[in-house]
Image (cartoon, rainbow, N blue to C red; front, side, top):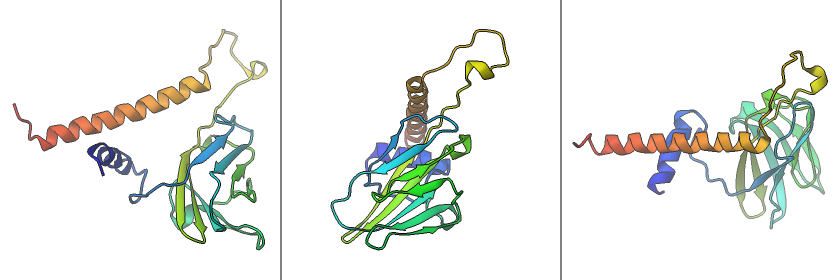
Amino acid sequence: MGKGAADSHILFSSFGFLEAEQNFTLLITVQPWFPQVGGEVLLIPEESKEKVDTCSWFRWDTAEKNQILVYQPPPVKDVQYKASYTGRESVNTDCSLQIKNISVSDITYYIMQRNTTKESEVGQIFLVVIVSVSPEKRTDTKKTTSVSGGAIAGIFVACIVGAVFLVGLISYTVTQGFVR
């Protein structure tokens, strides 16, 4: 593992984002990219090259208490709902997870573990939910401005990059022993 990867791992683990170092090999995409409160979102794993035995979805981390569901695709087609299931989640035959009536409490990491006939794959994605207020529901009379979804994503990424840089700088300074 390179020094940059080690620094980012230190950052994420220091904030509790990762229980243990995970090897995320599965790409997950979101549709739509910036879902709005009250809407629906679909978390879509990349297609498997092998026959899928089971798919498990989790919130935040892979602890048993955070497991949403376990799915066995056809011909079995069985869904077992787990401790973190809210009744708003459903799974499709491609193992994608659909969440209906999303809220700000759905903003977190979603992790999928997929077991195939040859390997086990893990993927992770952070779900961002947009809160929008329609002009009819506004209580103020002043003109308001809004920030686009792209700007929010840019701010989020810039904060993460800045934090990784700061941790790297601190790590470098400590390892160099404050040489003057």
